[in-house]
Length: 181
Image (cartoon, rainbow, N blue to C red; front, side, top):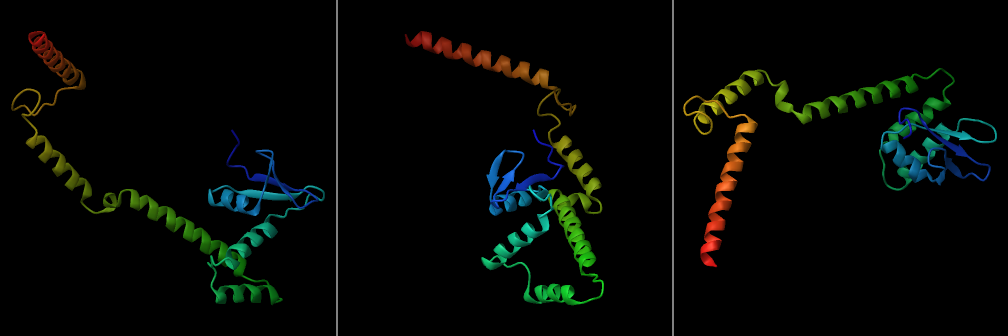
């Protein structure tokens, strides 16, 4: 099994074909895009020169998505990005974008955590849950186990009782069948 924490190494051959070094097969830009959507980091290296081409290919994937109607970047953001390349002064845009996306990822992960159990963060949730548990114990107190004790039988008691019931029912069915024949 490959180490998914390490970037997936893709080699570009002189023929411009992209080679996945993990699976030993050729891949397309769509495949690389899917690896990234699946949460995998990729690194694309030119086999001959050793140059890192990752940025170039990631930009190409974004351009392909944008040109096929999957627009994520508004025109004014694209315009500001172009302007940031044309100014001679050191731009704060890369740091701003990186921090913005880190905040977005953090916010998404926190939202997902809260989505799994949104009630857990509510003030008084634990007290409400304890009251609900006490109510359920009071309501089911005499149903199984010793009457009025509220004691639930353990799983071995329940399974032996269930087995005895099944044996009794089977014996009754066998008696009825023997009467029929």
